[in-house]
Structure formats: structure tokens, C-alpha cells
Image 1 (cartoon, helix red, strand yellow):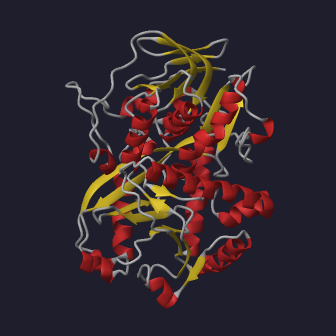
Image 2: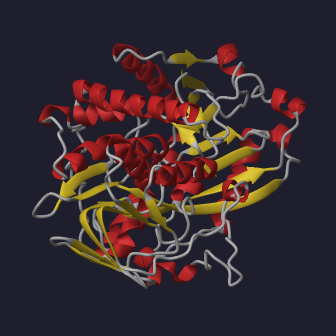
Length: 463
């Protein structure tokens, strides 16, 4: 494997660190943390494990490796600063969703494999919540549960089917309609819902910075402002950065939507953008008027192009989705005025009583999406010493924070540690290659056509 950084996709983004050394946040979440950017790596180093990417995947893997074997020399390379990418911009939903939804997973994989996959995702949710509590990470953890909402008659029946499947798998989902739904949220736009009590919400930037502290306290070396420019597999693997070279026995690629710029799985994991708007703080009377003040559940609609919304710790409403954007050549564009306008208009249609509420923040970012919305974990290379976790498809907060639990035993075994073969985690997406769409510009045209089909279905069904 040979990877080389293409800097052109980043040309549309401002510098992460200003000339005076200050960090430039993109999201509201990033404004809530104090960040002093770490210096770039300037001296050649050798290590047992090099991790590319300072998001949830890389940090969880570093923490798990150092917890399991403190003697391992672990180096994390982060292009910008920890939590600047998707891990510091997402909605902060700690949820067990994988694929399009539970019903589609069962159709694609069969009910038995669906059960195994969803149980792993619930383990990921429980692990993330327990880690935050045990290590006392200050990230505004709130166990709100999650309410999946039908917005049209065509999809209302799916709510019943979703609940029935969840009950067969042993989960505590509840179907909500009428007055029961009004207890959670009131809007003429929502016809029915299914409530899952397990999910939670966090401030993801605070969580990322907290994980950075844990990893460094455990002895991992984290190098910010250190982009990987070239990777060549070998014995050892060689990772070239602007000012130094890293030689590593094993490598973990935790780059998700940014992998295309490195040439990693570029025909299989696509850099898709999602955008978010955030209101000013909402007073208690206005929250009560829409029925959201009591349970504070996180919400998501059942459209192909979902809407996701939640309350922050200071009672702002975060509202995202409406559309996704894919830019030719893999361009990374953090702002899209058209989508912002669509989100704000949709918000006011859902909640007309909040028509005078102002929006204080707008931002976006890239995520890694596969055709079937399933992630891809695995190992590669002649010796099986190159690992990856990618393709979270917008559902990565819990799973990326669990990535270390999945990857670390495999890495430790390759490092010669005593790990039983039967104890190695192998979820269905381990060593799975997502479907590929080869060759530009056919890939771009094909993905845009697929996007158009999904939009047409939403329009036809009135979602």
C-alpha cells in the first residue's frame, strides 16, 4: 500500500491555526473548549504503532492500546488539532444506529446478523457512556434517549415494523402516537415515532479533548499540526510528514471522510458533507410550547435525507441534515448557504411557534459514507499490520469511540502479545470492503444520480 496526500481538497478551507498560533474553531462545540495547538513533529521517530488521525477512532485506539499494554510506543499524527474534523463538528448523538435503519439492516443481513450487529452497537453506546463516567470526562453527557419520527403516511407503517423487530431482538423500544408522542415533542410535521431509551448526547469537542488528555496521560505521543504526506508499507512502515519521518511496526488509519484525500479507499468511502444550524438559547416556555422541555429526547426524522435535532446543555436547538453535498475532486467545503437556508426554513415549518428564534451558528463538515451505509474495519498489508476503521456514514460517535476495543486486540496479537484467537472481535464489517464505484468522473456522476433518486423519493412520499 502506498498513499500520498492530495492537498487540493483542502484548498477551500482556511488555515486551522492562525499566524499568531491561535486555533480557529469551525463549530459551536469547538468554541466551548480551550485549545492550544500542539507543535508539529520535527524529529524522526520509531514506534510500535502509528495512528493517523486525532479523532475518536485514533484516540480510542491509542487509549485502549496503552491501557492494555503500557509498554507499547504509540504515536498519533493529526493533520490539524485533535477534534477539528468530524469528531468536533458532529451532532453529538451517542446512538446504536448502523446502516439506514434497523429494518434495512435486517433485510440486508438477515435478522440473526442484524441482532449481532445491533448488539455490538449497543455495547458501543454503553462503553462510551461508561468511559465518560468512569474517567470523569466533562462533555455534557445527557442520557436523553432517541426518538425516530415518521413525517409522512408512507413511512408511518415502518414505525410499527421497527418496534416489532426491536422487541424480537430484545430491546425496549416504544411506539408513540397522538398524546404519547406529544409528551415528547409536538409538531404537525410528526405523525408517529419510535423511542429508544439507551442513546445519549454529548458535546463532541469536549469529549475529543478529554480523550486526548487520557491518551497523553497513558503515555501516547500526540503530534498536532502534523499531516501525513506519504505512507509506504514495509518493515517497518514509513510515514512521511512535512518535517519528520515516522517508522512504525503497525499503522492504524483513522481518517474516515478524509481518507479520499490520501487515496485510501477513495472508490469505496466517499467524502460527503452535512451541515448544521444552531439557535440561540431557548427559554423554558418556548420549549414547553413544543413539548420538548420534559424528556429532552434527541430526534431524527425518517427521510432519506434525515433531519437530526437535539438540545444542548444551555438549551440551544441543534438542527442538521436536509441534504448532503458531494463536491467534485473531493473538495472539502465547510459552509453551504443553500443548505443553511433550507434547514432554517424547515425548522420553522416544524416549529412555527419558534418563528422568531434566531440562529447563532452555522457549520458543516465531511463524513465518510459507503453505498450501503455500513462501516468498514479491517487489516491489510503483507503482514496484516495495517489497520483501518472508516465509513461510519454519520453514525460514528459511539462506534468510533468503540473502535479501540475492536482494533486493539488484533494489534496486540500482531505485536506478539498473548491474545487468544477466539477473543478477537470480528463484527460483520471487519475485513469488509464496501462496494466500489471506480473512475472519475463516472463516480461523481453516479453518486449525484443516486442522491437525486433519494431526493425524488422523499419528495414523492411527502417526507
